[in-house]
Length: 300
Ligand code: ZN
Image 1 (cartoon, rainbow, N blue to C red):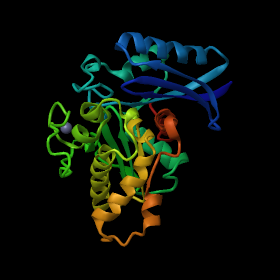
Image 2: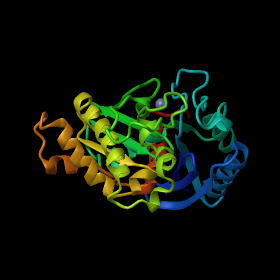
Image 3: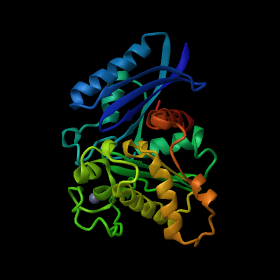
């Protein structure tokens, strides 16, 4: 029987499930909307049960999940969703639920750490030793890598909550972060866009809001460049589907950093990019986590 791997991109809007062969071919794929833990997890478990009963051996499962999350393998709560914006999910241990339901080893990390590992294996950070993956969606989070290793262990970075300097045309908006108000997430996430001008889809490309959002994201990129010196910074998530944002972020980055690192415009164009794995970066992230479990000896 063929050995296959499972991956879940556990997101705030949907749980994207995937089963892939050892040659990285997608065998099955389905997405379930994020409702209550009971309802959504049952559907995911059924999906992987179906894979298990259709002639394949599911070797392991990896979950790339929204946070905050306990990702410390030494913690008794390893795999537990911690209190955060998705309060209904706090106290749910994704790792143990899937381990018990599927009786296979289950790996877990943040969605952005998973996506970053997948991008390093197969995507736009292939072969990089220093890289960052930022998701800009319902929230903002980042997976950071330096010297080939994920940063922030045994916890995970909370990069979405860094402070940024206010844009001069954005002084009156209080920000939407329930903890800090106007941190990066409070100012540049999807809900922060909606809170100012309603549905961003209706806003023209030359609307001032896009310069404002690009400014905050460029500040985040400058901060990363000046600290971990990433070879590539991937920006994913719902807000980044507004593709004209990339050029705006690259231009503002160039302006802010003022040639301090000697980067040309084309260097910056190659550094600030979308994920190579597109909307599947998270689910491939789950697969990569599952495969790494095997590489490190796993738990079985
Ligand atoms: Zn915050």
